[in-house]
Length: 493
Image 1 (cartoon, rainbow, N blue to C red):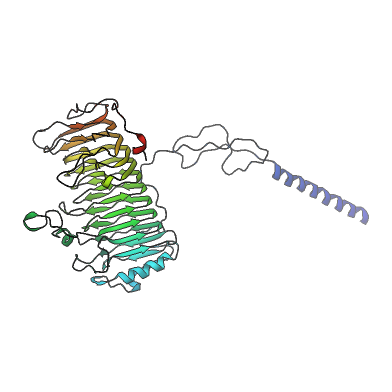
Image 2 (tube, rainbow, N blue to C red; image 1 turned 90 degrees about the vertical axis):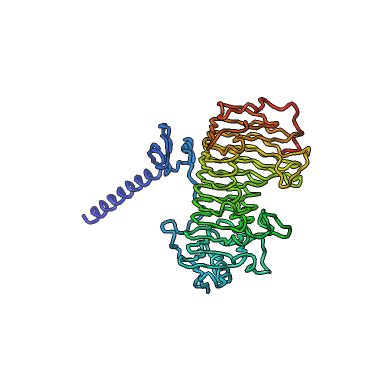
């Protein structure tokens, strides 16, 4: 009997092993395909045909097609910040890598020189990923002309919550320091400059120099060196974010970008008096892939100026004025080549300004300005609301030349508001030798702010179309193309 019981136990164990083996085999080789229910971020329905779920990995012999790409909805909000080490609270860092300049010897009384403390904090933050240089609130820091250079670890943040300012005027400026720039950020990638504080330029004594326009005795302008520092300069850098700051009273340009790629500017306040000379708000040159959004700018020169070598620039939600408007140029100075393309200005307000949207070039230049869109712009008491000036000149007499920057494919859509009647609201002064071509006007309605229009809109050698009738009527724009076309190689970019 014992040997029979033993045999039955062995037989039962063998049957259990065989059954479990069959179940494992089934788990490895049986798949039930699921229908794709769509991505939670999709903005429109996904086609209902069965496709593999994102979590399903088909066998190598499964020939089911890959899921179709989800449709993307238009996004007019600013692009995401490349690196944000503290997404929940802008005042604190979850990583703990905050380098407070007070810990490096800064005094913050507005009188002591805190330059060395900022450089030491920068050096420490530069060496770690997502490091934060912090200038805390309730302090006023004075630093001299300084270059904050990289390369640094990615995600570096320069956060100003207090007040940051330069020496007060030319007399206090150290003789060994450059008079052309104050804060310079050089060779950086994935850097953010932000905070709730103020960058104060102390510009008044620079504006009053007798070599500035009409600042000398009896309103004259005296000769002599007249360099004044640009306030903030980014040079040869990429993937930059500037946001939240109040920037004011710059001796010259408030902010410059030169040789940069990938720039996001959002929610800035830039201001200086209406008569402060050469105080451009934001100037870019040799820079591409730029977004400027949701900012307020009032100053004594161009609100935003776009120089040569700029491509793919998107400007939205900006309010300018008083200022000299939003300008492309000046371009082609000293017979140089200038190339600018794919510039969009949308949903902007320009008020109490000498110009609205402007393209300005010197005679004798080469290259081209092409692919420009000005759309949905409100004008409030603006002189020269729409202007192309290919006779830009800073002297009383400039000779005509046989070369010019070629202006082509410029659209003005939904430009409405009021203008200062001292000059026509629409002015196309194009080169004798190189006509402006493919200008488009649609829904342009500009009415006198006070009084009546003295002169009609002006055109010279300008070609284009009106999709709708303009107010005031513009009858001087020529249809079609000019009879003679200059050699394209000279004006190509």
